Length: 290
Image (cartoon, rainbow, N blue to C red):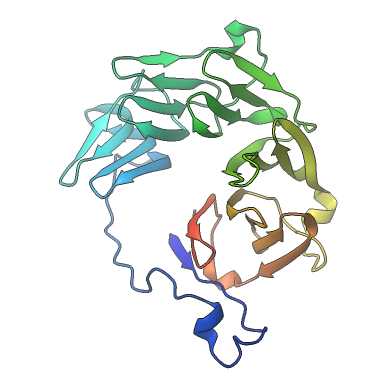
């Protein structure tokens, strides 16, 4: 299921008299979805990179009668099933910078395409005791962050992988960032949770991680209208002042300076299943899927 969400605040003047003055229309209301099915029962797709209208990449585990694959590419007319590095290797994430600069991750390791070959970076062989294949984000292949289980975060500067102190040992599920146009600072958020333990949001400004929000299981499992509730599954932002987060208790718009200030959009009928990811174009054009 894929859902689109449009949000605006009507409460403040002059929106009450003329709503369009304060809230621009969303980018679209009518969605015509085409469903493409990959593989047999048990196949899964975990991530997608949309390069252009006729250039889509998806990664996961695709099981067919003819064999197993872990990626597929759409060229505008046909899907081509692919085996990246190893056909039987499940892939969890993809980040596309150019046709000669693509990153994918397995459960624990990053892989990079440089135009001719796929290179696996076996971080354990580099002395890093980490498993960081759940998600990644970066501004370029010289500034990449990889996150994974037990609070693991690794940064790649184009030459070296460096393990970073996250301040938590929960499993980190998602990462997203933004560049401050005025200061040039890169602000990155990471979220995650471990069932029966706690849920967190981490914040990084210019290289320093801090636990920006945390809530233990016994507190997040039940709805608290005064606190972000539920396991924080995915995050997204496109402006410095707000962070979007989704849990099974709702969609949260959180003040970027204070995690205790937020709006919650609790339309439970909108997501009857388990949401895995949130992404968007702007604050009036958000999509989440699961």
